[in-house]
Image (cartoon, rainbow, N blue to C red; front, side, top):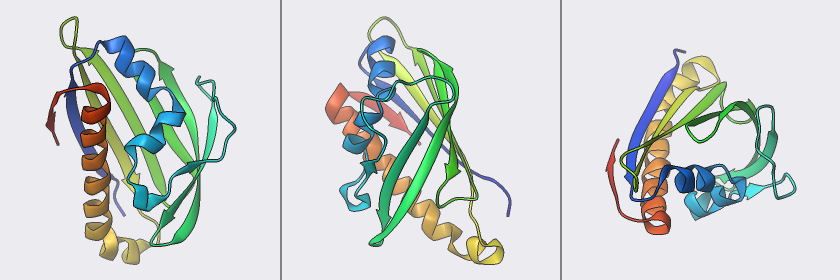
Length: 156
């Protein structure tokens, strides 16, 4: 199966350093993840973020618990970080978070997720369902970021 891409962009009415700080704290992930995923960080908090940091999570998908381990593959504060799945539900998951100042009091945040589903042809069959779910998760995330950090202009 070919790699799939999900890209979003969001303008946040907060300075670059504040936005990067929010996203660099693993404990904030639960606040921007839909409740139905029952997201839980298993790694003891606080987590010191740096290249090579490992973070373990558990999520529930349709009541089935899934363990997920990511590694911070790149760490370039306050402009970018990349987390990649080492263990989890995807054959490949690489999430790039990019941040750029948009004047002194606003930030544009861009997410790019490159992913591949497991299970060959079965993965291709469920791809539309997975894509719809990911769109929903990232839509929820944008709304919560707006609520928590301020007004924004979003495009997906």
